[in-house]
Length: 111
Image (cartoon, rainbow, N blue to C red; front, side, top):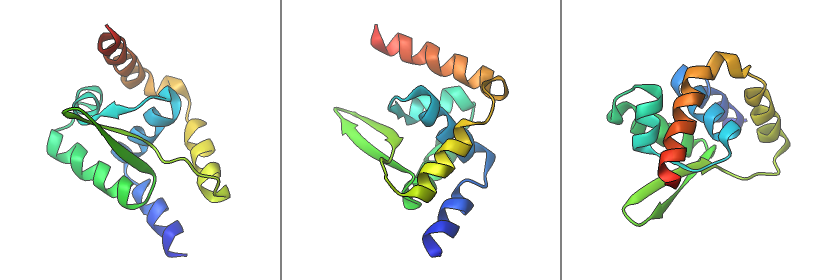
């Protein structure tokens, strides 16, 4: 039961929920500085939230050059899959500002 409690506690914060929603809906790796800009939070706070999500095994990180990117942990665990499905059901209109900013940043990264 501990792993389920850890997941639910990790998702009980609005900022962490937004991070997981973004990672679920953009299907792309993003770095701390991009999350900071999208959510308009301090780098320290975003790093703390990412650490909690990582500890709950909801996200993973990969280092590419000088950048560390975060992405959703792949899983076949039914509970986790249902949680991700529930999070992705949050209407896009409720995250419109964040999604627009994130897509803009990702487009800039491509160029």
